[in-house]
Image (cartoon, rainbow, N blue to C red; front, side, top):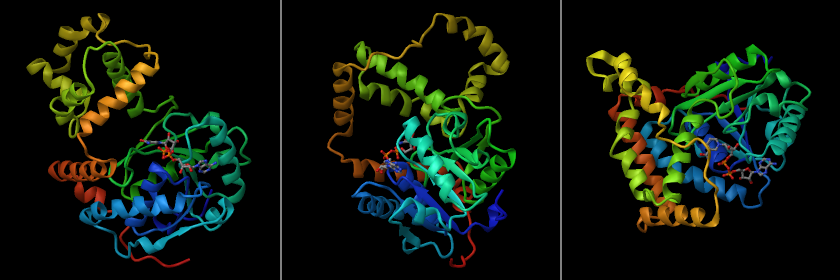
Length: 327
Ligand SMILES: NC(=O)c1ccc[n+]([C@@H]2O[C@H](COP(=O)([O-])OP(=O)(O)OC[C@H]3O[C@@H](n4cnc5c(N)ncnc54)[C@H](O)[C@@H]3O)[C@@H](O)[C@H]2O)c1
């Protein structure tokens, strides 16, 4: 294991710099780290700098760590250069198993010994991704939520060959870096939140495919409904309140049998062209002329407002606040 403690980390490498990798870059910069990024796409640096620029106003409103600056971002020419000096590595390449396996093997070969390497994978178990690495013990999943610079949660879990020390180190590091961490004891594809999100998304797609609800109605049903509760109280405790004074026990007696009806379909619908087009067109209609950049700004402000309203801003903003040494 690395001898650098999570509290002493100054230099982070982000490999793969799209929506999520770029979001991680923005987060680590805002928390005052030196960040080196690498992405093989020819336009990756320009895209990354645009993403960080767009995120910076929201991050500034949240409160930057002392010394935080976009100037602390270096874009490396090669993967090896990106991780050569890193004290922590976050991988955010496309969600393809073979690609992740090869990339993690290369990162393991290039990063300093013992440095923890985390994957942003949305659902692959680390056990399946670490098979060819020389030191699989330091490979963990650190699954963020979009955008990683605003949504606090990171789900951390190791694979069968990951050491317990690497999992504990990663969990502590993310906490020091201002994240809210769930350390899972066992691997399950999709981890926790994506299993829940996928169930909702699968049912939403069925409803569009069958003409049972429009994209707009599906979104309104959440933002005007349960979504308001979920920002501060999860689906289990809110259901306990739905049982009145009898709490969850009454809720289970009352609605348990309807689980068998069932109200939802468990198989995903066929993503045929009609459904694909209907969902894309429905989202365009729901955007009502707003561009993706407009929607990103609106979402960022909304998340900040919710965090502030629910008293969670100080935790998210309080990260690594000391001035940093240089390399
Ligand atoms: N989008 C989300 O909401 C979300 C949320 C959590 C986790 N994730 C996970 O994060 C990872 C990245 O997803 P994304 O949404 O940022 O995708 P993306 O397509 O926006 O970005 C992927 C980036 O990886 C780069 N890339 C391609 N081949 C590469 C390679 N061999 N090595 C390094 N980089 C390479 C691409 O050029 C691109 O910039 C995936 O594992 C995904 O499952 C996504």
